[in-house]
Image 1 (cartoon, rainbow, N blue to C red):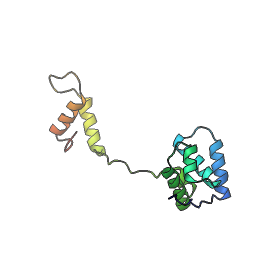
Image 2: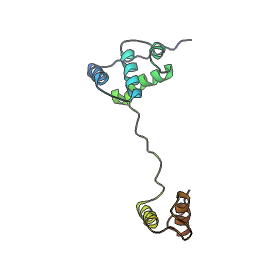
Image 3: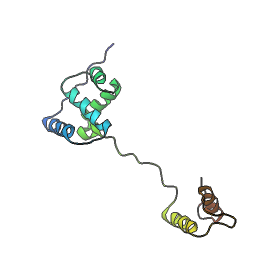
Image 4: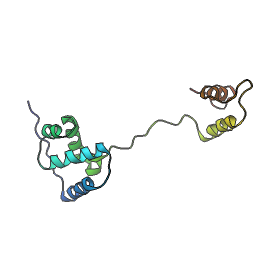
Length: 131
């Protein structure tokens, strides 16, 4: 059974921003593909037909339409900023490790290696653990 088409109404302001964006210079490919999909959806094309014309899946096209309907043009074209991983070391720990590496390496070693820095930082109790 076929899905019913997603009702999408792109207002004139967003439509002009979309056209201006597509005429602009170099952009990320994924953002341009989303803009092209949104433009075709605004013209009344169904998600499977848009997916055939662009290298996107029908599910991705539907998600673009839903994001536009719920959050506008910027939400449809760009992903939210992700928080990323927590830093492993705070500023004072980083400074202590850098100071250690700026000094001479342990006796019997010619230079610092990544493994040696990790071992020595834990041994000197500069950081609780190192990987």
